[in-house]
Amino acid sequence: MGPKLDSVQTPEGEVVVLTEAAWSHIADEHPEIASCRDEVLLALAKPDAVTDDPHAGRRRFYRRGVGP
Image 1: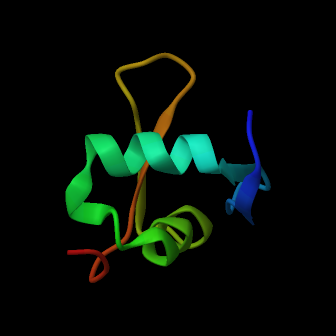
Image 2: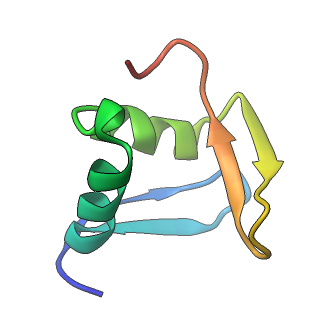
């Protein structure tokens, strides 16, 4: 799993742990948000919308007015 960078609790009470490896993957795949780690964590903690992801067992979190 790798070293932990941060963690946040979703409104549903789930704790999401952000590891160095996970953030590296996110930054590589989505360079437009590489400098927005705090905003990504905020979207998880206080989303404006949450939708199902096409991959089973995953969700997408959205927050207005943050990010690039």
